[in-house]
Image (cartoon, rainbow, N blue to C red; front, side, top):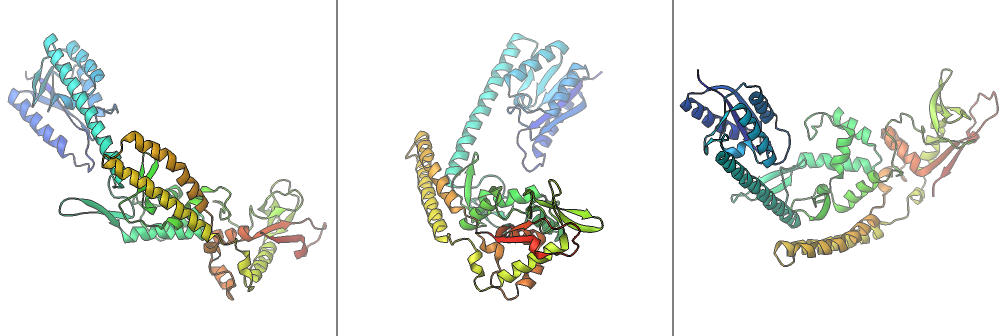
Length: 460
């Protein structure tokens, strides 16, 4: 009766998921088993799984289960390091082979005689060498990644918004994917115009715009996409911006910082919530207790009602019409531009210029490190000195600009027509930016809407 053999194949990295490496191993293992007259009863495969990383290897676990259960007599692998790169794991394998009396054969290193002290010694020596090679390779990879980061070179596959191009010498550069880059720019423009993440997400899905993952867009995906430092051409390494990247940016620095300011500030004036379905819900205030007003049914009529103690209630349609009429009348006035925040463009530009200069100094230090002019400790000291200053200057440059939100409305003779075309999310953002709306208590039994019971104050 021929001996029962189990083949084990593994490759550490298979980013394209082709499986070609394990296929070649399997063919050579099958040839070895056939030459020895063994009957292959099972093949266990771990594709794109490192033995050094310590991650669970399903194929290896099933191989060990077969051994423990007496289902196989021989383990066949292409090379011993396909089985183990961890001395601790190797010891468990040796103990199980000793217990079951199984044979271990490899295509490139011959038989592993784990039944003798000498065989086990050489197995452990080979395991130690494999461990050293893995650790040394990891050190080289980390050094290469750090050098690439300091030089601003991209790493990994091209991300959404770019496509990789290769020169004849196989040098890679990322260039813009115009269609995807336009999607990122459109998201940024919509955010600065007061649109909510939810409305932007819904619009992308309604227009069947392909997402980075190919399925439907999710709100978190939109947020993550537009907030990437990469959009502004910034290179990130281990969670920190280390300088300018070598790829063309999708957003200019000013736009990117504006988007960050809008999404990072929980109290931003362009925040309209995620579930609001009415113009003043959560914006208008109760004139008695100060709580926000929410929409509720008053018999058969939609009304704004105090969300805390129901102090006041007013017909929704009446309040919406009043606030809209007052707002549009004010926006049509010649001095409507006075409603905007004071112009801080000069201050923002100066802060952005300062941040850019500091980043240039950091980039220069990174180049010196890459060229061997300074060591790693010196680079870390320079980074520790410059990073707080860069962050402070960047923070001063992040001032939310009101202009995109009010674009087309301020001083426009047809502001009413523009208003009708705006999404509810943006209308709410405009109201919240410019007005404080308070609903006062009225006399009991009054059924006619009195505009005097709604106060509107213009924000400074």
